[in-house]
Image 1 (cartoon, rainbow, N blue to C red):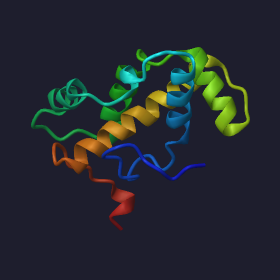
Image 2 (cartoon, helix red, strand yellow):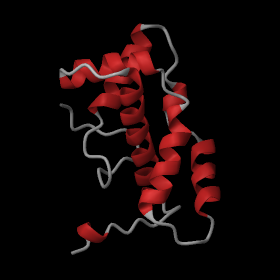
Image 3 (cartoon, one colour):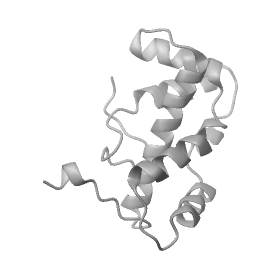
Image 4 (spheres, helix red, strand yellow):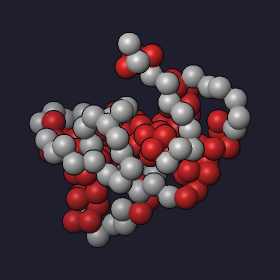
Length: 126
């Protein structure tokens, strides 16, 4: 599996982006746009609105972001990518959710990298 990360990804939350990269590859092969599954200014604005100036638990925002990104992912192509990366066949909704988790983590990492948010991961600070 590739250790390459997308732009502004730090690996702080998501250590393996190979499923997302395979999904991008399959979208391109099928003549579909990857743009819906790339981070955009709208995504960064969304997370800023979601958090505002309050403290929020990482698991709360992560869950909201997973739902936010799931709508953009084609479940059938996600399942195909999952099988190619992990060698296991899963139902399309499971694959879609896994990709949405990766997208959510990527946005959190990128927002932290850019200084838009501060992520405090207790188990990493010990």
